Each structure stands twice: as structure tokens, then as C-alpha cells.
Image (cartoon, rainbow, N blue to C red; front, top):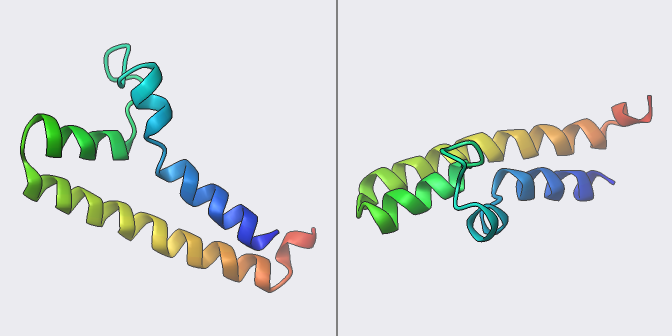
Length: 80
């Protein structure tokens, strides 16, 4: 259960293909995700430095959250 929840969280934070295929971030910017923003920076605007920096921000958000999630389930707090 802990692994499934953690992988589900990571997958939700990295959602790109659904947004790209269905709406391209629209209407307006209503369905843009952080990963779609990284894609725009790198491949539409050729700002690779900003894209790499934003990618590191994504890692900085996902890594501690996944570690906390695993520790939460490891200790048995999820039984309540």
C-alpha cells in the first residue's frame, strides 16, 4: 500500500501526456501542470536553463513528499 500510494503521488505530480494530448494546457492556462510548464520552457521558448531549474524544483517537491509518505506508511499511521 505504501509503495502504491507513493508511486501514485509521484505520477500525479508528473502528469504531462494527458494535458498535452487533450488540452495543450488550456483553456488559457487552466490545466497546465509543472511538467507542462517545463516542456514549454525547454521546447517552445528554448530556455533550457529555466527548464532545468524548474525541473530541480519539481525534484525538490517530489522527493521529500515521497520520503514522508513512505515513512508515514512504514510506521503504521495509515491504519487509522
